[in-house]
Length: 79
Image (cartoon, rainbow, N blue to C red; front, side, top):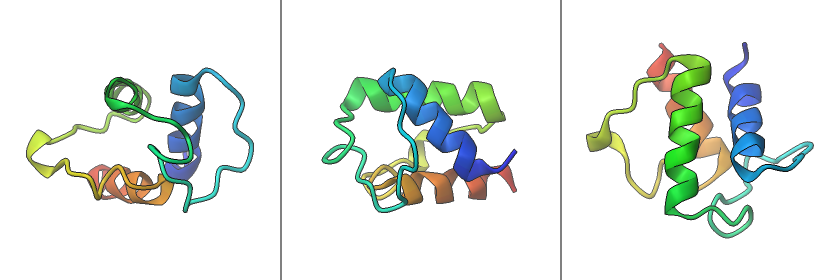
């Protein structure tokens, strides 16, 4: 499955609402109202859905800045 679609589905699941057409530039914290708990839920969703293994040493604010940056991180970790 396309990582961009999977990330968007995981975001919608975590936020428990439909989010059609989330743009890449949507900011997780500012635009989508994520908090630290939501980020953990998102990482669990991505691990379960896609088998992405998260390296805590790689995680920083840049990874979670926008939908696009988390998609890039997931894509990189699938390769």
